[in-house]
Length: 488
Ligand code: GLU
Image (tube, rainbow, N blue to C red; front, side, top):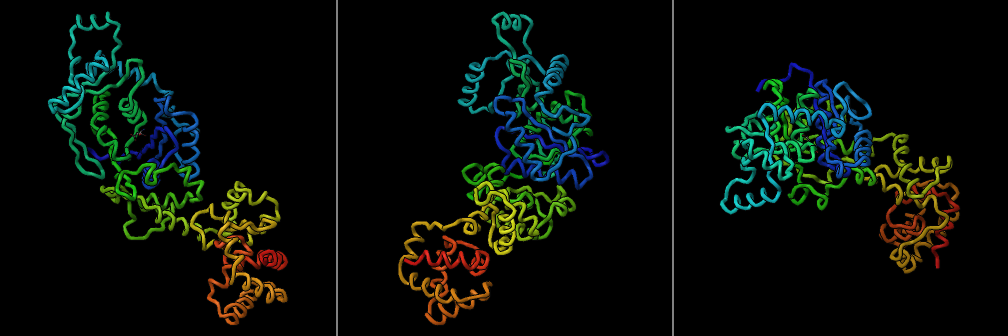
């Protein structure tokens, strides 16, 4: 196939949002975006919503919002426009109808009157005889009389594409030469009896009309490629003008099964709620099937654009690894400036009702953030980490309450109270020195036994930011009051 590199690169991302975009969709979108940016080409965002029962306005709006949140800007598409619009397939139905009619007229397609029951019965027979499944060509060359008979019976035809004998060969940019023998690619439906188009028709017509040069998409669509190429031929597109295909490897779950809800493929909205940063999601997804050429794992969007080439995309499946995503998220959190960290933390604290958003509260949060920045891997952890600073009284979980009511906790807390009451300079290093001398040196306790009860008394939880810093932030009066309250 002729190389398209002389033309302006036009890549499209063309989801059918039948739910929230998920990991697989976003990985495709990211690669489309990176390829467009790397080549200085255009990213076209097209919504494939011909199935309006499953693709709703709400899902479309969410898909748009998700891409924006991730920073994957498109050059043509919804909200942006462009000279090849509209970019919602539901607004292009006339175009598909016209092309289907042209194919009928030129003999590339034909009306097929077979009913669902008849097709099913024949498929059953194919199964029995161990024949390749698919349409058997029954209506390929109906006589005028047969057509009249079907019409008289009130049958409404579908429009079916005629697949010629032979094979389709194309050079996939990732998988190399791919060959499909047409005996395995039966004549396929372009338009349903109700006049609605099928995916294969709409996608191929739009890729041609929108002058798409590169189709980077999931490997699950590989087998529909020969049908799409058949549509290009029927549209009289010259082979050198066909888009080039690059089928991205599957994303597998940890258990080696194709990614699904069960093993981690949940919507990007879920990752967002959990406090994964958009730059971490993009960084991690970039590594799912692509590599920058060395083993670095922390890459910026800028570096992705500079380094992204299709040659570096792997053809073998990539495995989704939540632990690695979390590690990258932690790295990205640590790299934030305090201002940036603050602006990303506030929505979680507000949503969880930890703060109401007063200036004073925001100041407290800001002063507390440096001590938790090293300790969290997801932004939603800020709630559990900082809650103790904003409550009048800490609430203990049953287990913690039990623990501090027993010995040696009671003794530890009493001792802590005794040495801290006289401490004038309420700084974390002073607090630490006092507590170490009293609890470790004097009482001879291990750090966990010594500091655990103090931590629970002061913060309500055994998970918290570093203890001494937490006590400094909380202030002397409140710290002492909480220690007192913990004494039976
Ligand atoms: N709309 C199709 C889907 O979401 C993808 C179209 C394509 O990339 O060719 O499955």
